[in-house]
Length: 335
Image 1 (cartoon, rainbow, N blue to C red):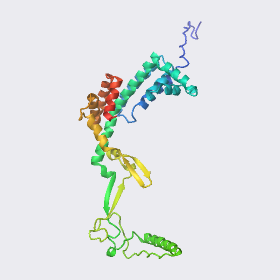
Image 2 (cartoon, one colour; image 1 turned 120 degrees about the vertical axis):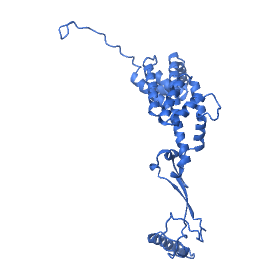
Image 3 (cartoon, one colour; image 1 turned 135 degrees about the horizontal axis):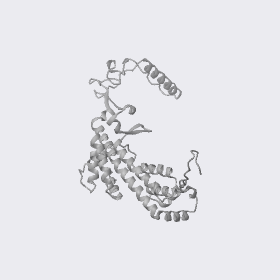
Image 4 (spheres, one colour; image 1 turned 90 degrees about the horizontal axis):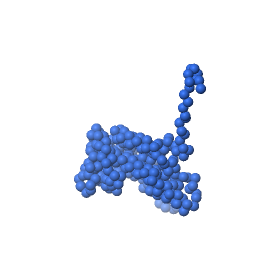
């Protein structure tokens, strides 16, 4: 055949199409999602994130060379997450979820015992274990910030105050009002209440008096000569605006809970955070995972040194079996 340029055209066979049940793009995205779901939800430092991306990319390349079909690869991912063959099979094959349970279980057992599927499960477990160990550095950094926040910045989050009572600075130590509108509101409420009492043939209560004057300041110091509070004043608990907290002070706060008795400020556990840091530093010396712990403790110590230690930790984890990595991590967090 002659080409447009007058020269003999070279015929080339088209690239073979991939099997219908193998989708490299879906496998690649699914593998990255699997590693992210298996690792704790902590934010990595840029250097540690780069290490994780290298590992994920290597896993994606392995996936493309795999003999697993798309459904088998999805099964391997779900099995690593739930460790239940039947459940993983139904998640990987939703069109068969309504089939009889004994059939689903039999199919799941056939899939999980295939050599290439078992190999894929081991790959996912190894990748998830490495991602978990890399994240230990970020977890310990969060623990360090919690401990620092409690020890040095707790007063930025909550404050317990003793302030003046209503009688401290009133004229002749009588009840002091904030301003005239507050006093008028009290008169209205008292008058309404007395109307109800008269209707019930009860004796009306005395109306409020403004003899103590106005200008009550709820932040003023107690008066030591006050005959009502004897100088102790009243207590006030103040919570900071959590949207304005920064640094270690923000690390203390876990959330806010509204209950029938009021608003409760939820805070991270200081003692547990401190214990995890002690374990990471090897202070207890209670198991054989000191190498991983020491590296993670170094990662939490500072910015540049922490990133380097996180990278070294990831390298050392490669020489450990998935079970050794899992035990080291669980021992670190006290699981």
